Length: 265
Image 1: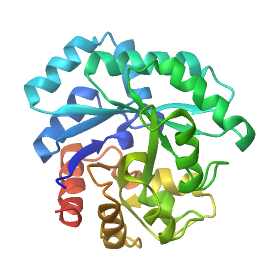
Image 2 (image 1 turned 90 degrees about the vertical axis):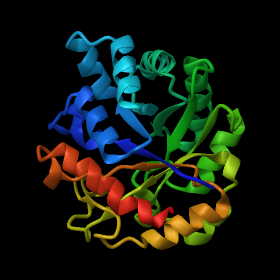
Image 3 (image 1 turned 45 degrees about the vertical axis):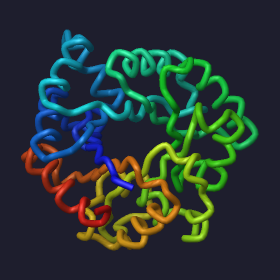
């Protein structure tokens, strides 16, 4: 299987305090050699607030020879916010940009998760497939539980986002990854991490990731496991590093792909 590489620029999101405008994210991703770029909700909201128009952003993508592969951080189901409105907005962005995937998280407790996901699927209304990212510090922390949650609404409507960070820092073993059916996977996320500095995993995941091969994760085993399941079609590179925020974004994008590609080719 030939993998496509997606540059997840969330490290440059307004959410993390060091925003890089979307046109610059596109140019950096294209210059680095990525096939696709992902736009997060907060960056898209800033783009529109500054007068940006989706059709202009699409033309910028087309001129750069790169596509948009996902809308990320679209909603956290169960966090008490208006996720229905957020997902309708994400679906509209996806439709305008030709995006197939909208990424979400789930912070609802297990009894409420299936109903929340059904509502989320209805909000997106078939305009994109939901990619459910499980996190080791939320009620949805295991890949198997996430697969079964997606199965309830149908894998054509929702799939699982498998991030090496959440696998390595979470409760699953390697056998759990081997049991994931390929049709359940929306995409794979790849990165590495520095040794834990704090018990606060939310801080660690947002600020202390590093490039594959430069940290403590078994990147080779993860890539091999994903290839073995047949789920290595779309690889998102998401290095969330406080050390790189505000630094040379083009060099950052280039290093992300240069450090990641050898594991998948």
